[in-house]
Length: 197
Image (cartoon, rainbow, N blue to C red):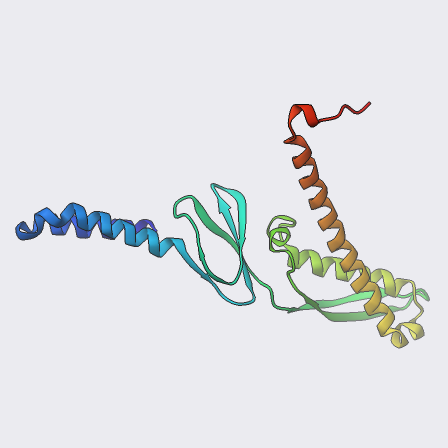
C-alpha cells in the first residue's frame, strides 16, 4: 500500500510541476489517493478459502469467499487458510508392540481447517501438532497390541487415531468457548454481576 501511495504523490508532484496542469494537481492527488484506498480495500477471497483479518493487531473478522472490503492501514489480512482437505504424511517411526517386537510404521492423515480463527490463534503450528499427536497416538495404540494383531486391526488403529485427533480439536474448541464466555461475563454491567462465595 505504501508504494502505491508514494506513486500517487509523485505523479501529483509531476502534474503540479507541469505549468498548464498546476491547477489540477490537488484534485489529481485526492483522486489518486482515493483510487489507492479503493484498490487496497477491496479483497477477493477465492472459493474454499477463509482469510483472518486483524484490526490494529487484534482479531476482527473472518473473510468468507467472494468480494469483501477492509479498511486500509487499519485492517490487514493476517492469515490465509485453505478449507480443502489436505493430505499429511506421517513419517516412519519405530513402535514397540506388547510382545516386545519393534515395528516400523508410517501413515497418511487427511485434515481440514473448519475453524480459521482457531487454526490461526489456537496453536503456533497446527500442522506439526496434528502430526505429533498422530505419531504419539499411533505408538500408544501399537504398544497395546501384539505383533500379529497389529497387522489385522488397521481399522481399529485408524479409529483410535481419528478419535484422539477429534478429541484434541474438541478440547481446543471448548477452551476457546470458555475464554469467550469469561470475556462476556467480564464485560457485564456492574448490576448484572453476581457475587460468588
